[in-house]
Length: 432
Ligand SMILES: Nc1ncnc2c1ncn2[C@@H]1O[C@H](COP(=O)(O)OP(=O)(O)OP(=O)(O)O)[C@@H](O)[C@H]1O
Ligand SMILES: [Mg+2]
Image 1 (cartoon, rainbow, N blue to C red):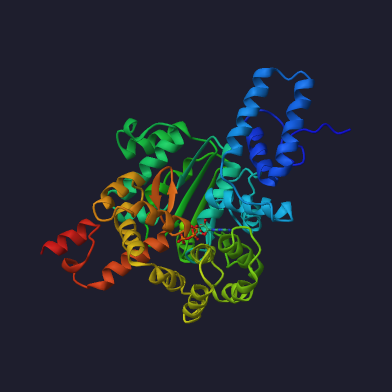
Image 2: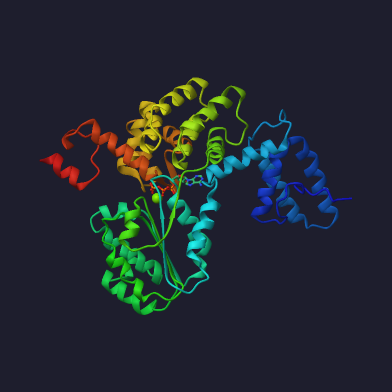
């Protein structure tokens, strides 16, 4: 007879570490009925086989604790797989980990990178904004970074170079990443570059330069290339293929839009969170999928916004989306931003203009003067995938940020009339 171990049918590894708790949680969802009988028998089975009482007590406490968490009502659901789908979709969403079709891109870029070969290679990933270039570069970086002696992922280079001293800061980050020292220990960028040349000479490094424009002066950063060791790899992502031509990158990968079935999968994962589409929304869902475009960013934002909304809202959104021609990513996103109630739109604009990278609690504290419900308004924006939280800091995609800033700029053309000023330049013009 197979021992009646709690969770033995969940396919999760057996131990008493975090995986064990994950298994308990997974089983909790499978059914209260099964849980009561299954766990009681399982604990008895383990006790009879001499598992020490302390460990058993910890397991029992964990089960009681899990049992008291209000969960999904699953009694009326006939298929356990459905419950598991919902849980998995929700957890992956919460972790920002629901990716569709990414492996296909990763494999193609990995072929160009050919990490086994000993030459120095620069590979470019290009495609329009929101198509998934940074995401692909992150996947690859995580997969291969430990094959190198040093590595650095310089994210959003375009954004950084717009700030005063931005290029120096990037060089500083590159130096500190590759040498494993903090910025404070680098006296000047030139010193850092010299250190890289001497200390990483002939060492194998991996560098990602994310979001490059043709107009960039990258020579100072790229000046270290000639001192890199064999097997080194540089990955450049850009919206503009000309940037790759400018830096003579011949190994290129173009990220196209998602396939329709991928759009459908991603959209449904956000709009229905793992549940099957309700009958009255199934046709609408297909229509939205064929109108929404092929970019994961738009699919994620529109799908998340529509989650648990009424059929009327779905119909209005479809009508608005239909008015926007295909490649206009920002205009598709604008459909959602326009539909936000005032409070949500104000908070969206504040984050776009001021609070990206700021602590969530700091922003909430500042908003609390204006609106005591700002925390819950922010939650709605997070659930709509418009705003994300990374390490307790507020974040939004650069396409959404630019959209928000354009809204502020377009409302009043004169800087003095803008509702928000976020750059020195704007503040200076406003004061004139
Ligand atoms: N394959 C995918 N499946 C699901 N979501 C994805 C996928 N690829 C990207 N995304 C999501 O789409 C959004 C845009 O992706 P990303 O930032 O990588 O685009 P990008 O091409 O770098 O855009 P930009 O040119 O504006 O920098 C992100 O929120 C990301 O999580
Ligand atoms: Mg990007």
